[in-house]
Length: 128
Image 1: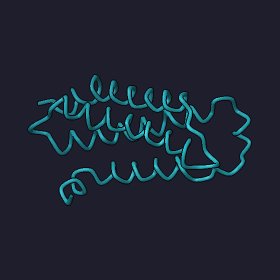
Image 2: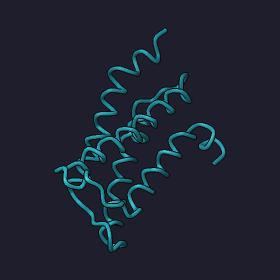
Image 3: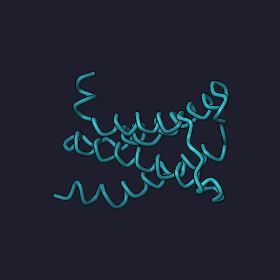
Image 4: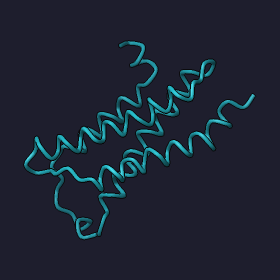
């Protein structure tokens, strides 16, 4: 457990922030009138989560970078977390609801972060 805290401190903070933001009761704002504004927020949250996971994985595994492991850590796990949160919102809260479009937006954020990390960041990070 201490190893995970040492290797992924920012990722843990971002996961906690995403979970908090997913379950708190948001106040009414003028942005509520903007169509699909929440989908943009979902894309940004999961883009940030996946991006931080990619960066911390690369930093912690400079000598033994394994693509499959980072895809599971920074790709599959955030999407699974997203699905669990949507189900919990639907069945365990009265003020939030699960939404397939939110899940899709979360998946888009993870996918965008993965593509940018793999094609743009990883080659520069491991440049010799």
